[in-house]
Length: 614
Image (cartoon, rainbow, N blue to C red; front, top):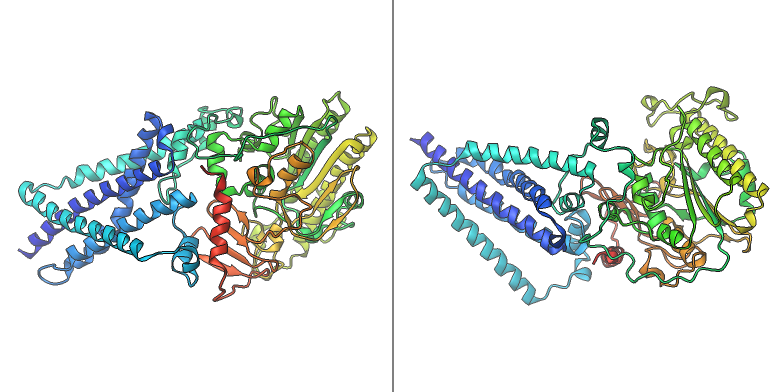
């Protein structure tokens, strides 16, 4: 008899789980309306979003259903099972209703930052909750709880009247929808279907399947397709720029050459490692306290070209929005030529930054990184030797310091040096010198190639009318902080985000600037000082003019999932990890327990960064 009672209660609970899943789906659909996406979604987009939201809701609703199961074993009458299931399901719904409010405001789902702003010691500085608001919220919570209790009794009534729960059909249907939504998204991501990709962002904590490389191998897409603009932008929710661009270009416009070294450790910036660039830097204005916008390439280049944080990445990509800098270069008649050692297809930098550029060079020739770095150097020199259009914008992106794939005969002058990066040997006790020397030898070879570029510009008498910017996308760590961090992407300490930065302009004096500058400053500086843009900087960028010594505290660095704020001049870092945890640490990656940061300033900074959303 007891076994039969357990089974009946469990079946009633499954009906309750099914209805909770439907309610959660309705909540997720409301996110779409809260972010102005609904007006742009087509029927094929809804064909992804509804199954995707339903299957994700089913996974979340499974949490209270599973956690309440042990209470079927407690007591003879199982009196705790229903209250536990109802309470947990109600809390789940309350959480995702609140998450919808957060998403509409910040464009990301509840994470450690939000929780700290809500419940931290300075929460009252950010959110002012008066009595009426508390009463309204309490009323809504009470109403929702009442509805959830009523649904339980409805489920009992349904089961007693029908004696049927459709457990197998419901489970099979949800599994089919889960598989369908992921496969649909994988195809849509490869086929660049904006509505599908955009709506996937609204589903909380969603990790939809992507398989671009597989689609490429299967012939669903081509390499050229990967560089095409996704186009449209309707309903993207972006307003970038805030006001239409107004520009009055100078009668004589200067060429621009942007040289970027992937993974440039600032401790390796000296005359021994980079003699050509070091000598050239004496003719440049140098910015000695320059921070990247990421500890990886994607966030770094988005900050540099868009002057936006990488939190905008997906919206920029799926809407086909191009950097204002590149659009203005095109409008001013520049001939734009990117020379990237690594492919512009994976990651899709060609599509993100240069899809409006004709005859885009998307790949380099060569079997090794060194060969490809040589190839971009040779191609640039051939371009300069040809009858190139003037003015021109060239972007040279060297990759050897990132790959450290050195030919044995060129693995000098620093010894002893590894023949290749032996990552399996790295630990906190590893002597970094052989790896460090391999890395410095890589930079030495890049310097030789960059020296050829600068020499060619001088030989062709182009330097007098050319702006040359030299920097790294981000840093590279060799366990300097003794925390067993090697490479990049592991933390946001100065070793991984501080890079050399210099600007050559023959028409301006040579200065050394020690105030903090960032990659966000590159695009607005070029647009305001060289491309004739008249808009206020806050309408086109989150950065400032490079020479402006204004405060740059709460500097956003990282990508959408793992990001941080560099809070102050001491480079104390507030990091939100992929897990959702928030940690504060100093410049040496030592945790600072109990550190009280200004939550209101953080909230204001987030809202300021998000101002390019409608």
